[in-house]
Image (tube, rainbow, N blue to C red; front, top):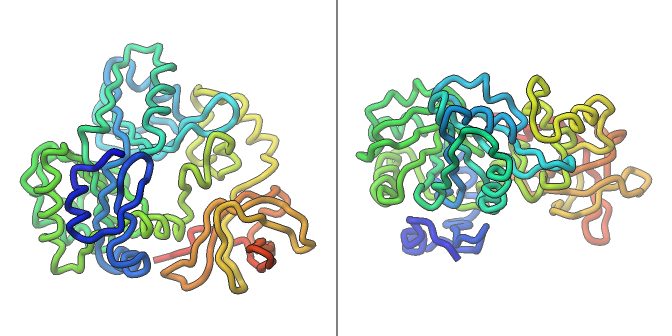
Length: 360
């Protein structure tokens, strides 16, 4: 099992450690609800160094990015990031990822930890361009500094004006005494903040400086369990749960990152699916009765007939109600539709709602 550069610190802090995507990762420190609320109200720091970083460089770097992803990276300006996905050739999704544009001949692709090897092989297999690929996943660490106090708290450790970094944009510069840090106004929580990428050798220095700078703002280290409840409250997809090799971006309501103004892998089939309409759609729902939905539970119509399945579910720490996401037949996917979730032997009422569940 792999370890991040900060693994020993998580052990020192008494984190509950679990295997995740081939790494030993902190799932919680003080408890998921407390950590969740810390991020919503104040500030939290996540070690997410297990994520993968691929660099694409060369004259035709953009051509390769455009070929393997659904969103239109040609619209990016230098210093801008973009959420996108890589479609496979059978209507599913290889992975969802974020593209960072440094300049016309340099991009970074940040991929999910569990998919690093698969994604690397996939992108390379489609690289018929004058583009060089580098997998620097093992050389980089990544911290997500998330919460409404992030800008104010972190400004003391960077000469850059952090308040000037717009959402889904980034700067490269000094942070916590380290050079060439990628400071990105992105995140997976819906509470604002940054994701910062840096070399492993700077990990301990940056971790310590972040906690010190955030001390007066209520900062706490946060584990993967709260990361999951935070993203679910925002209706954000988790690869392996809500999207995978068998779910299309059209079904997953990712049409907004699927641009048919360019050519990409399996574009024609996905365009046809969009025009004809998918047979099922990803929905968000709130549970009306007592019970917590979990991945794999059946979704039924009010007559008790199976119409789909739950992909993600939890008790929302912010809303104090059970929420979830899942796929249902398209005719049942309208907002306000009442459905049933099969929770063990009980059928529990729920209603389809428009995400995000949590609105700041």
